[in-house]
Amino acid sequence: MRSSLRGAGAAAAATALVAVIAGSWFGYQQLAGPSCSGQIQLSLAAAPEIAPAVKAAADQWVADGAAVGPTCIAVNVTAAEPVDVAAAVASKHGATLAGVGQASGTAVTPDVWVPDSSTWLLRLRNGGATAFAPANGASIARSPIVVAVPEPVASARLNWPDKKLTWTDLLRQVTSSKPLRAGIVEPTQDAAGLSGLLSLTAAASGAGGDAQKAMTGAFRALATGRSALRQDLLARFPRSSDPAAIANGLGAAALSEEDVIAYNQTKPPIQLAALYLEPSPMPLDYPFAVLPGIEPAKASAAKVLFELLTTPGFRNRLAAQSLRGPDGNWGDGFKAPQGAPSPANGGGNAVPAIGQGGTAGLDPAAIQRATATWSVATQSGRMLCVIDVSGSMKQVVPSAGKATREQVTVEAARRGLGLFDDSWSIGLWTFSTKLSGNTDYKQLVGINPLSGNRGALEQGLAGIRPSDGNTGLYDTMLAAYKEVQREWEPGKVNSVVLFTDGKNDDDNGISQAELLKQLAKIQDPEQPVQVVIIGIGADVSQAELKSITKVTGGGAFVTEDPAKIGDIFLQAIALRPNAPR
Image (cartoon, rainbow, N blue to C red; front, side):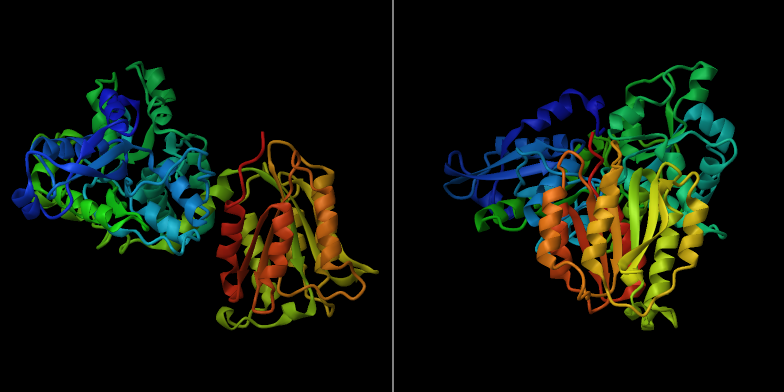
């Protein structure tokens, strides 16, 4: 189990030092000898629940006298939470992952990484690590994602085990007038939570009606019961058979099958039922990823280690850790939960394959959209939205029918508004040149809580029309920054989000150098204001925009296709840092 419930096994894996061999299994049999000299060190970081099985397999190999000719190979196997390794890899390769945060100063990337899910590899590449191309990536184990429900709740409320449930059924339960008390491990930091989130998102999209409203409602219901750590979430399941304890405890959470088996092995007062909902969610697949840049000798050692971890004997070691083999079948001694599917007994469709190389069957856009939407819908902030209304915003967007750049931008902002709950404070400005007398910008709605401001913002957005003016970017940016800074609010991310389709074009305004000088002078590290600039179309200068955010913090996002602005907006908001404490 990916928590303290594994006890000594996980702790032992965290410091295990084991020797393994380079070459093929046949080569090992032919070249194994009683002694060797020299040593090649291979570091391997594995998700805590699979680390004991990897250690045990390598230990046995060493005991058999593994060596390649005269050279010894050693592998330092460390149990490491995937989010921690992902943060270190992201820092090394310049990627940004929504909700992950910065790596610790002591974090070191391994030679080989076995996270719990290929989604980590995909998120790193999609998050800006374009040079991140790990070798292999094939699965060495599997654990389906289930919905864990206390057995009395599953029986009384969900008719378990007689009824087969769908994610649409769960969506109704979570958002009903008497909602099932659901929780989730932060899905931006946990692969099982992310898998459950993707399944709920798909259910909301296919439910008919206002899909965004249904999805946002489900996300906020889950957010009330979210936990940063898995063991904290598990501790909230009822710990007594008392009806009040069951009623007040956690009622449902997306976890791995391994989590549920390991939890029940601790003999809790209330056992958890593992519900295998349809359609089957993305499982944990434990890819064997050889990270880029390692030496050829280490790569050879990693290749042989992978071969060792695909043998029938290793499947049995996985079974001891409540994990399946990569094809979904299990080894000797595996204690399957009631109703657990297996390809061997005709339940193969319930343990879907991810694809060759781990990430082939994953949709990066869906993952990015789900994590971004979650981040926006479940956090709180204070934001000034500033929209370009210069004459160029009248241009028609070919990929958006006959809609103009202005219409596409306003629609993205309108849909984004629906994701923010009433704890947000949001204001709205427009800008061009000489929009209000000699002033380039105009306030439509002041920055106030959405609880009393939502209608005014919707009305303000509906009335936006492009002008005949140019782009007064610099004067507007400085004024917007000062406006957010003026009533800075602690405990929230205070930010300016500005949409523009052009470069600064204002003969009567301040220069770029003066803007940067002024921003550097007034910015306060103890009261930071994040600036997010979303550039639309081919006329935007990314260098110009980045020069601003380099001083203020935040980020510049540019898309030449304005029709993609909705997704860009989500990404931009989701990648903001956590609010300062």
